[in-house]
Length: 480
Image (cartoon, rainbow, N blue to C red; front, side):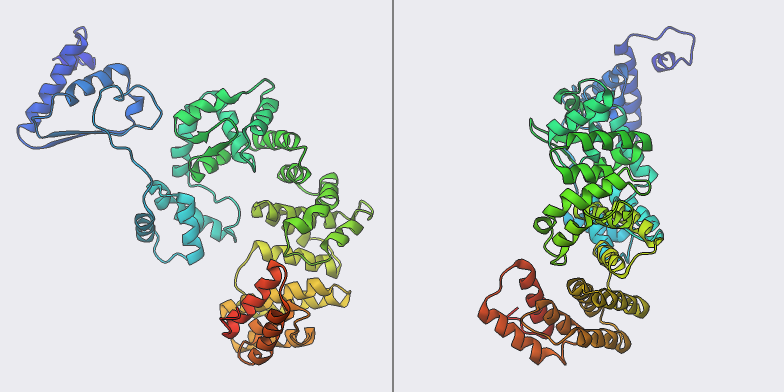
């Protein structure tokens, strides 16, 4: 009767909480006299105080009965059963072996690269391990798994729901942190303040830290799980993301590359000033950032700064390079798609293809694609771009070697390597190209070049990489 009144099933006035708690305990005990009882309470942090008091009352009095109360609550949320002094067990991420087993059971037959990425993205979260394969399948149907992996609605709802409970200033600060390419809390708060139009201080992150969404100290803020960052980013509207990127571009003013990168995230077509900034100040730092570029990249971009402003394709291509360097292949792919529609000269076609191959590092198993890549490389060589020619040819040789293609594709690469010139210690890329193009036929010449280079000393990590890969594919493992 007390519970009927509490639930409004009768006209009686609801009794005092103690009588309600006793009535609940009596029902549980009566059922437990016949069989064991499991009481499950999910999202216990959302319980209203009277319900939490009743459950705590029951939990403290079931030790002698075959009754188990299992309640799940999110870390960092006060109230609920947190004050009931019940035994607790803190759930952590699944270990690597268990994660791999769950993923394989949920999505057998994944490609190795996709499987590795999903394990990293899930970070031991069981829901993510079950749901991310669906998102990966959608992304693969669209042609690429590059960039930010889209979350399924179920994952987004699970993670975004945790953020929705937080104050508005905290949600804004989290969005800025999610879109930032760094973790410096001062810069993030400055950008958040610019978006909000009022001061946002370190206290804005404290509710998120208490909810175990981020790790916070006076200098930095980091998301506890990659999927939390993704959910925050994905649940925001397009205009809100644009405002945040604009604010981050301003906040990162002392670092021109990072400023341009955030402005690149706003691109909806050709942005001449943005591209010119990339081709200018970014060019002077390119050799330090990325040694795998063609050797003439710096001087080439210096010339670009003197070109008339209608050379937007050059600027778009360099913007794609910057996006790739900053870990945003999704932006790079979007810009490269814009370039595909333009009528470019052979050198710019080759440079765009170079960036495209870096972004999409698939093995080369299609004869048409291999032939096209070789043709693009050789047209660039005809204009004097020898470094670019050899870089593209190296990609063709190395990736066809990994794919172990048929004889027709192999012969294409062998012929292209022969046209480029014999292996020589003076050009270590050619050594690696010939080694990958035909390891058995070229082994003797390649090993001679390896010994010569090793005897004279090798400088630079990239040169060592060319030689080591050449030694590996030809079986000269000690030298490699």
